[in-house]
Image 1 (tube, one colour):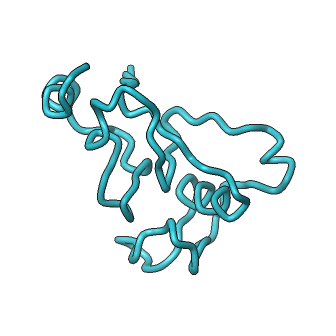
Image 2 (tube, helix red, strand yellow):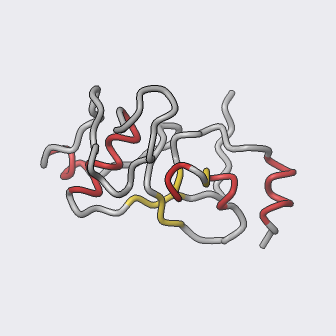
Length: 112
């Protein structure tokens, strides 16, 4: 298993800045080196697997600010204040539906 600093030096910072935990303070590159999936509060769309039954139950990528009272959103979004949209909003909505989000920080996705 690699140390987090070795992985960050090898792969650099995470491209996906929408997958995070700790209120948006810890992105996937800070979670590397654990050798296992990690619980996250928000997801990004770089590589995203969603169970189809959750979409059938109403889970969407909200185009509006979602989760104003949710414990898994950032205190303040850097652009519009409170609430999350799109992939981050989907994660908050999933949380409200009782679903946990997990990330694979040691999986390196390469963009062509």
